[in-house]
Image 1 (tube, rainbow, N blue to C red):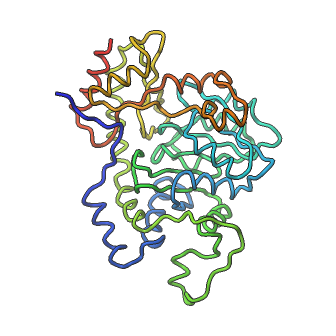
Image 2: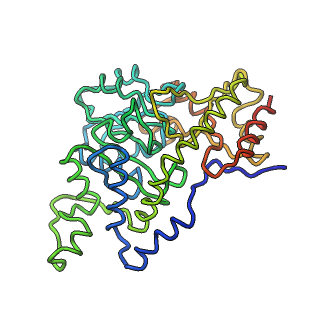
Image 3: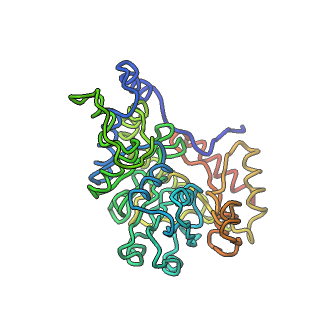
Length: 379
């Protein structure tokens, strides 16, 4: 029997529904006590001093660069294979995007190429923990020296590198709670840091540049007095409706990741015999967040082209996706920076040959077996 297996589905239900009752009944819908509770849970789990909830990982990354003072004339190093917003936030700041190739074995930043891309104008480096696998942070730190590292952990809630959770591996960490992530608030993001000054600046920047939070302003002794605005800020606040959902989801994070890890190992075992399909790279020294299970199709050995494989699986009710895209092959960056696909060969391979297959917490054992059998049947 043909099934319908989405590439991803969030796990939300009665608990999340009930959690929204309190902000709805009290009328406190903007950023407030539920967001604060969510932030505290996230900071505790990721072993960082500060966690600040925002509207998305994109706005988290933007705030991180602004807080670091990135602006016109600066350069920021970004992997060439990542979701476009990692590069876009550099453009928002008026700085120059400097792309660095990735290792198609891990889909993460290639330290050897990183060394070649750093210049005296490099103001920050954004290592991406793509699909939930942390980048090689020791190698990156050794090359970066004093250059701040901004972790793009959009896919990496709950992940860790050598027992250190993502979000505490650089100057600032940035996370996503989009529905395709392991936990969700619908949309939403988080900024993490151990730096008190950066946390203070980011806290103001996300709230129009106000000197106090919305909660402090409305519940303080003089709510009729407007706060000071000493910097140009943004409205990047998470709502308490989202925060209430986030509190419930945070309590399930490790259960979700453990389940995904078990099924990722099942895929690894069952797909190992397929010569044309490379399963994800993983080392026991890392805790993989398994936001996605992304394979690599060997076009020389495969029975058909990657896109045709995806079409065949879709016809059987199995959703697939390219892992993500190569930024240098997107029209805006290709045209602005005069780039060719071959300029970043690792990213080009990842762009043309990566294939994510379903892995999420609403799949059954029968669903996983169905996916494996369908892939094996392709030849």
